[in-house]
Amino acid sequence: MRNLYRKYIQSHRGATVGPWRWVFDTKTVLQTASSAGSLALDRLFFTAKRNDTKLLYAQTDSVDFDIVCINLLRRPDKRQFIEKQFGTADFNLKIFSAIDGLTIDTNQLIDDGRLSPGHHCPATGMPLTPAQIGAYLSHYELWRAALASPNKISLILEDDALMTCNKATLEEFARNIPEDADLFFINRRKNKTKHISLHASKFVSHFWGLTAYFLTKQGAEKLITLSLPIYKSADEAISELNENGMINCYCSRKELVVECSNPRDARNFRFTSDIISRT
Image: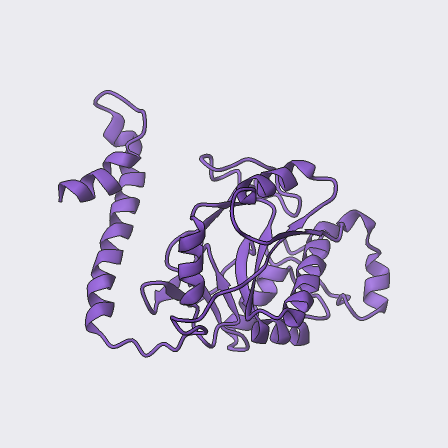
């Protein structure tokens, strides 16, 4: 019990001193303790229960994947942020030069059948911004690359992703991706999920965000077939496809990545978003 206290509560009390420290840290302490307790109960549950979830990899298979990060050429600060994280890791990191919304011709995209004339952002009710369209097209190009890859999975990152795990942990979760997964997110934010194993959960309602996700070859094929013309932002479109049972979206039980462009997250906020303002 003392070890659990030190690991899950004491470590989150922060530098606040005096009798008010518990008041300031209560929310973090309760959330962390609740998460730890839930995981402990699930360990007992999934150990006692036969787990029939089929996995994409056999436990003896080697797990190979490239990591591709979307980065605007005019944001070298974000590129340095990503490259520094992987500079000492044995990963094959590639930088994809994002399609810049400032350079696209929306009328031409509509004429080409790549953009719906009725495109809109559900959050604002307004037409998609050029930045949102550029972000969508950037992900689309990486879906095409994933389909052509020799690997079963590809890891796609946006350049505000902060890795919170080491290589061994990332590979452990990759090895436990369900066989029918099309996308496997490695951060779930506060989206609602149903736990299916000690490593994976399934989204059960609307979710948002494309900061970091594994994409399987079957998932790439489905997205390429279903995603054009663009009528919503990429994450809204993917969430809708998942809710309608057209694709299968899972996420890791553990947050392996945090997003660093959300000003509501004061602890991790580093960059202003290039796509949309949440303020």
